Image (tube, rainbow, N blue to C red; front, side, top):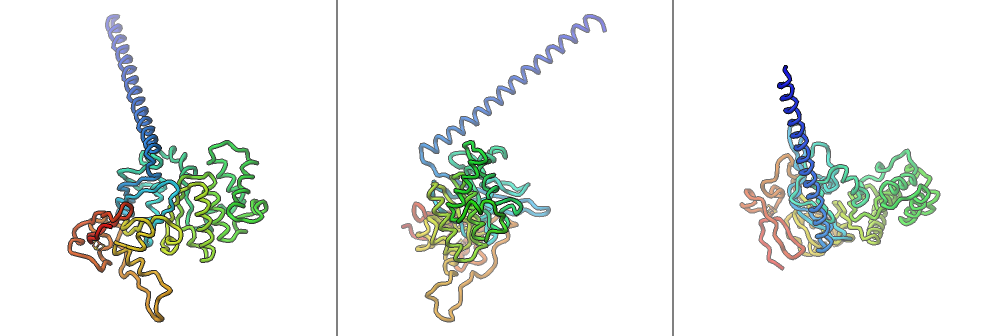
Length: 378
Ligand code: SF4
């Protein structure tokens, strides 16, 4: 290679490097704009939420699909609801209706491979759909907490009760705390949820606690950072009836004190009647009816809700009168619902129900149901 060719090659190399540098800068700028745009949109949404007093949680068209080796499960299909600050709502439905999966999907707690889609999923004006796992880490436990079903297994059997609460406080509290301060706070929390001799109990292990006491500990842990939203997944199922009432009363009082909104997942309508303000009735992965508790209990509109209410045993039942179960089985979740999921069990079905998915009809500002039946507006 002669000198001229060498010079030519050197120039080309220089040009290539310059071009590469320019491309990198363009990319960095574009990336910067994209991050900036995301930040501005996010700030705008949060500002809008503050100014308009928008709902704390707003869910539109939320669906979950879980691909298995051969088939796909559709546990949640296009649900829509919202929740205000400090509101106590309940979700009822039979096992497999999708209530737990729907709530876990809000927290981003789905099995790996599961797909979550939504037109809108915003919490305090923040878009949860676009959150990364790292960003979710900043919300879970701090802004949204969850109490799981079984207090017997939700605690670590090898750690002292107090250490488990202190650990949650140290990890999730916004303000910095020393270990001693976290311990004092844990003891205060144990007392506040009705555990006597809290200092001694702080040093005990879960096996030394009864089911009711363990559930009190879980409530203390879930509320330790005063989250804006608490999801309680059948928190009293494993407890006996007298303890159930105490635990729900405690949960309500503690949440009210912190202005924490609660979503209570349950299949027990009597618990809902006594404790919740609003109610979402789920079936086959869809919300069948929603509204204020008194609206739904006084004027249920959806045939499934009517059947659920009719199935509650009553003190006015005649001797020998039989309970009224809902006959038939829940729908398969291996198919996307293309028609009313309650069709097979509905006593009021019409020809249109066989071919068309019912749309949501409003009965009042707060009460609506998804059915082809026509009901007069209030
Ligand atoms: S849409 Fe039809 S099948 Fe479904 S609940 Fe209403 S009446 Fe029954």
